[in-house]
Length: 91
Length: 376
Image 1 (tube, helix red, strand yellow):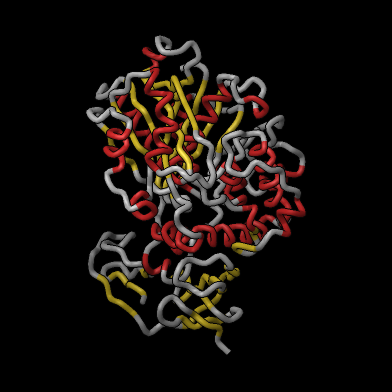
Image 2 (spheres, each protein chain N blue to C red):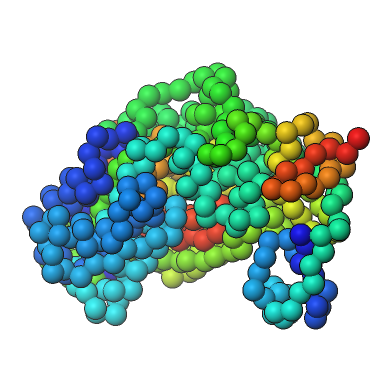
């Protein structure tokens, strides 16, 4: 989900109480943008409790917002954001 | 201004003693000699690791200094630096005259996955659910550093070679063995491309210093170590929002603030927060100890070795000495205390008169830099 400030239009991914740019507290949310460009990926083999034993971490840019996600398949240039922090390469 | 007049460490590592017993081991020699009127405990995860809360009072009672006021400072991996800042404030404001700063953490009761998960709890839920961890960010930083500055992979491993050598000279270090470049590069990959020896181990341990105002310092010892400057700064906790993963602004600003207060341009040694090898290089660049984008080259010619131009992590750093979270920042002050008093044994830096430590929370979420010296 992406938050868009109703006052200044600034977009961000991780929830905040106030817009970091104009300090407005009113936001729209967008859940329709799921495809993004892979900025960088790297493999993690020491993972936290409750996660798969290894995966690729990806930093993906969707609509000018950077999002972290993990992919169980080798990432490609275009990625699709899924639920629960997962993403997968677009065919 | 304030000064450190006494210091102590336990051996870091997988210890059988409880958190309270580790605290007792490090503090008892200090409170036998010094009358303490305030205790600041640096600890981050006693609840998560040991099911203990209110540990500052538990510790003072365990030590039979029940009526000495105490507080616990939790700023994750940066707790130690924050605790020193709080202690300085207590002294400057005349609320206290002799402050004990105790860093302690008991981590080894949990397995690696559990510890990784607990430490990742400092991330926002959106990043945590994606599987991000603190070590994983070091992998990202390394890849980006190599790409942007055309740095060699070996340079990061050389940080671990140097710090393990230093740790082999430190009787308090968790890992007291020398490792070769090949051993580092061929150890299991943890966060691509970084390997096991390039990360800190999971350690138990405690460290402590006694701080007083500088005008009182010589009544306690003829070799006080003065805190000449201290700076604290913060940055966003949301790593996805960092403009540049190779910039740690909190470190840069804390360093500038501390050096300005200390009126110091050059330091003789530095203890940095090398949770992963890449961090030592990037932090040294942010603090002006190494050139931006060229710091990695310094590891090919012993520039940062104990006998080099700017010795870094003479203690072995977090990488080899270990990283009992709450104890680490205070342990850096202990190393500075030993170096400036010329008591660091085989790790002694020649003519060490001014030193610097960096205690960092999260992945640069906040930082405290302290400048130490042999005069106010």
